Structure formats: structure tokens, C-alpha cells
Length: 164
Image (cartoon, rainbow, N blue to C red; front, side, top):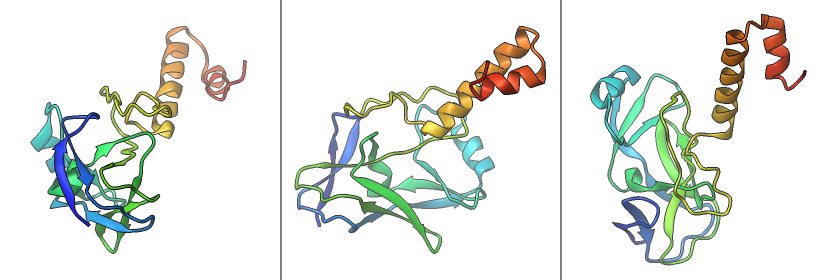
């Protein structure tokens, strides 16, 4: 498999394959220095972009470099990320044709800064945040507005669940 970083219509540069990749193929490792979330915050406070990947343990962040860090986000991905024995791998989730850009759904969470998506997919949700995180932010907004309007905690809980 031959991969190359080149200009992307999604964002800046991306990773493209010059050969077909079969579904299920381990494509590339998301590699980099392992740091704490606090160190990641310190290093990148106010930075316009990062190449960070938070591991499932919640205690480790990969400060990405190399090919894995250059895969762009898409709401209609052809790859996905999986942690195997402490390493982060990017796998093809469908057959990928030669010349295609390799993309995965970042499913960002735990932030409120804008993260607009420009993937161009008909399935685009307009943000790189996960659907679950966006739902949580909407619930927070409803609760905040309800409290501002003087509603009780019970009324707020009912509104957050979609009741009246």
C-alpha cells in the first residue's frame, strides 16, 4: 500500500492512497509522543489546530505526527480508529479505491469551541463533534436557559428529556 500526503479539498492536506485498500486492512498507526491531558492543554492552549488523540484510558493523549496525524475528518468515513494493546491503528471500514483520500470521523467531545466540518459529504452533520456530544451541549443549553427563566430543577429535567 502506498500512501502520500498532498493537498486536500477537505482541509489543508490529507492522506491519499495510490493503491486499492480492502475493507478491514490496518492502514496506518496514529503515532506520537504520549502525554497527559494536562500537558496537551498546556502545549496547545489557544492553538488553532492540534493533532491530539485521547486514548480510552482518559489519562493519555497522543501528540500525533506522521501519516496517521494527517488523515482528515469526514462525516462519511472510509476508515476508523481502534486501540489495540495501547496502540492506535486506523483501519479501512470499506473497500477504498486508488486515489481516494483516507478519512475518519473524529467524533470530538469534551469541548465547546467551534469545530465546523467541511467534509462535503451529503451526510455531513456540520461539525466534527460526535452526535452524542452535540446532544449533551443542546441539553446544557436548554437547562441553562430554563434556569435563567426561573424554572425548577424538575421542570428542567422534564424539558431536557423532551417533555412539556
